[in-house]
Length: 280
Image (cartoon, rainbow, N blue to C red):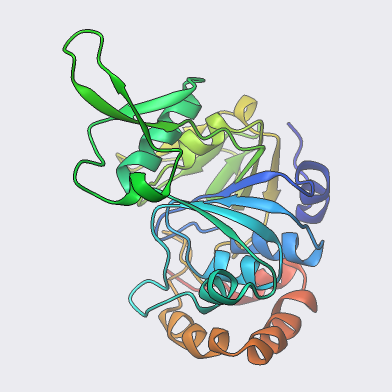
C-alpha cells in the first residue's frame, strides 16, 4: 500500500463511471480529494454519502455526478444545496438521479457492505413514503418470527475516499473525534484512498473513540495537510463557519459558482490546502 501524491492516487483509483463514496461526519470531510476529482474532470460518477453537504454541491455543480445515493442533503445550519437543487429541478449542468434513504438504512447498508453481505435488514420505513418512490427499499419475512422487516441493498462502492488525522510509516491510519461510517465505507469498497494531515512514527495517546484502519484495508494514503478544510480536523484546525455561510450566496447563481470554482479549485492544487490550515 503506497504513499502517493493525491493527483496520482486519484488518477489510478477513480475512473469515469465509478461509484465513489466520500464519507466523513461533521469533520474530516475530504474536500481536497473532491477538488482533485474536479480538476481531473471525472464524469458519470455515482456519488455516495450519508450527509451530502458543500463537497457534493461542488462535485454536482461541476458535472461530475450522474447519480446520488444519500440520506440527507443540505448546507449544515444554513439551508439548501443550490447546485444539487439546480441539477434535480433544472438538469443543470446535467440531469442527476437520486437514491434516497433514511440515516438508519444507509448506516445498515454500510454495515452490510463491510460484512460482504448482499443486503441489510432493519426495523424501519414503517408508515413513511420513501418505499413508494425508491424501489430499492424492499422487505423480507423473518423466518423465525414471521415479522415483516425492511431491506436495502448493501453499499459496495468502487472507491471510498476519506480524510483522517494521521498515518504511521507502515500506512496504518488513525481517525479521532466524531466518527461516522468511515470504517465501514473503507471495508465495503473495492479500493480506498485516505488523505491525512501528517505521517508520524507513533500514534501516541489515543482518545476512547479512536479508530485505526490497518494498511491492508487501504489502496493509497496521501499526505494533504488541510485536506478537510473548510470542515475541521479535530486537533488540527477549526471549521470555517464563515465559509459555510458564504457558500449559500456563492452557489445560488450559476455564473458566480463557476467563477468561484475556477479561481479556487481549477486554478489551485492539492498543496494549496496547506495554506488554509487553522490552529485548533
